Length: 204
Image (cartoon, rainbow, N blue to C red; front, side, top):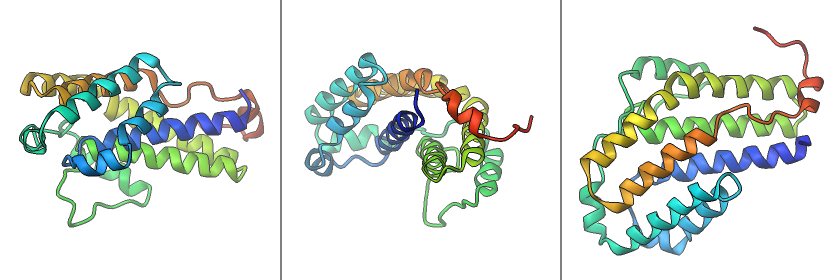
């Protein structure tokens, strides 16, 4: 894979995190319909896996079926990933990030963790576009540490908890979609040999 193709692939992976994170915010039907939210998400996921993209169609059908009130009732179930708050905060701070004092969600809330992955991927692709090869590989390494140490560890139990706690088909399909996406979206997959060759000696 050429570096240019890898950048496009990584941008798509990052946008998947960004849009999937948005699914866990308070539902707003009118905005989602106007912005063709589900169509955009399905288009991003299809090259990764048609099976994962199929979950988005089920999510959209359910989202349109329910009233906004029904969605709000199902919204707000326990969305915290696990007992890792202080460790997560430390990692955010190491990358110059801090929690907005007006932001009500905990640092290991599903939206925050997925948006942090989006941020790391954005910084990776930004570095790649500037030919900052070592910085890009460092961001990929950090993604792997966060993904393996926090995100992947909690996603399946978290998604199981969603499905146990509601029969709302939007959220049950969202749980299936997120769980399947995480299995396919490990950081560092398909790093081009060209990129590894351009970078300097790697630190252990």
